[in-house]
Image (tube, rainbow, N blue to C red; front, top):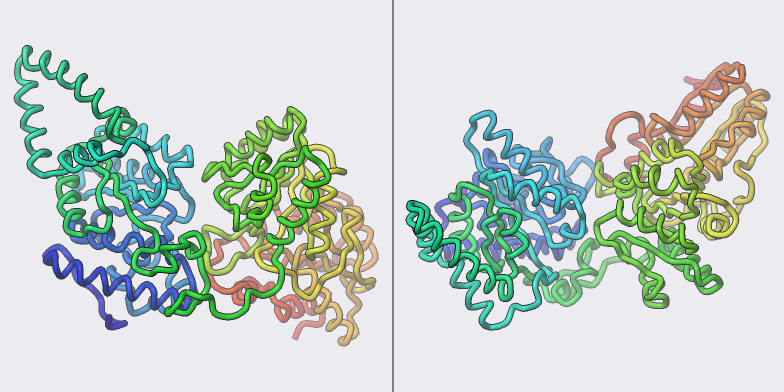
Length: 617
């Protein structure tokens, strides 16, 4: 495929041309992701489905709503971005998720799961209320059905009567195990255009007279009994959808015909599509989980390029929790569809009866932890910072009010890199500090994570959160995890406060400042909530100047808390600066690029320190 080739409307593409296009797209996806990394298996699985969608819908006007959105690469290629695909997930390049600011073909932001049906219904309602003319289709994977929000959307969409199509991309789950030969035969018959047309005529004729309506109800009850025992559609039709499927998700001709019919129905339709993750690339087909999100790899055999590097915080957490579980049978692990991502793979194998994957249902996970803690277990919920946002209400209502001892290990805290705005963990310091009775710890090294996890499980009462970043530690590799705050370097001219893996950077800046004759005191916060203000205020009374380096947004940050505490206690400051991620969303890029963008790299912090001490250029 020509790298710069951009595809026009696919509406008039022949079936043979569509099949050829699918093969080109599959090769293009493998080529791009092998260089940039990204979500491979999911995108290979939706090639035919995406082409069929673009044969039927005009996404510049019609609204195609992705669920999660990591399977949007084919859509991006088909909507004018093929020539930029080598910049996928790189700083200033194409995002790995739908992004309306990037293209009018991207209907909405889609980085978290289970949202598509609710969003699509809202769009359909807006279309009807405003008297506009466009079609709405939602594409969600079967994994999204582990999240309660998907069912909330389905329930209302089915009853709304709004014309919209929901496509369930089923690439692993079995909605109904009774799909034998007869069931498959009946499913195929129900998908034939002549059957669908005859069904509409039958409904009109039988509904025209009272005797017809009585006969229709009797036949309908018999038919529904047969369908309930043989076909996986009862749940969706009970919600109010016209159900179609299951259908082969790699038959671009059949998918196109069904989508054309579904788009013409004056009401909600659910199309159940069966696909294969990693389709067309054998390593991804054999191990789709390994190729869900992957770094650059060799196209010939799928082997990753480069070394796997040093131990990550996630891996250390998994090892440390397994050690604690061997010592205490009350320790249990919870995750929300992120077993490997949170480092719990080995824990799940060793303690299968104490490991719980709740699916994409973070709120449920928090409340389940509450029940476990209430009855004497010690639940440890490993969850990405960006996904813990969904459990905020449950943290307050189900955990904090009752002061329950549950541990929340907040992975991917801070900047996460190439996944961008929807995945950065920049908000948890702000929203967690509003939860009464919650203790928040922030290890800066792997050894501190091990020590703080042990504190959280066995020493600190009530709810505890331990937050740590994606990847591994940097040049700070010590363990000063005991007190709520510790002074790592004495100084008289400036108090520098930080936490997490910025600690090494701040220490390096302090050393550089010493060469300029500026004496900086470095205080590391081991605990963010409750904020250990006294240690910092004692230092400020000596130095009179404050610099806080924090990988989070300004609002509700530890830095703001320290400034407020200083003002409340009458500590006069001759200068103060917060080095943080600001008050806007941060795009995708490498961690180093994003820290430089936010002013959190060593050079930026150094220059800010010189300014606040009156040594600026």
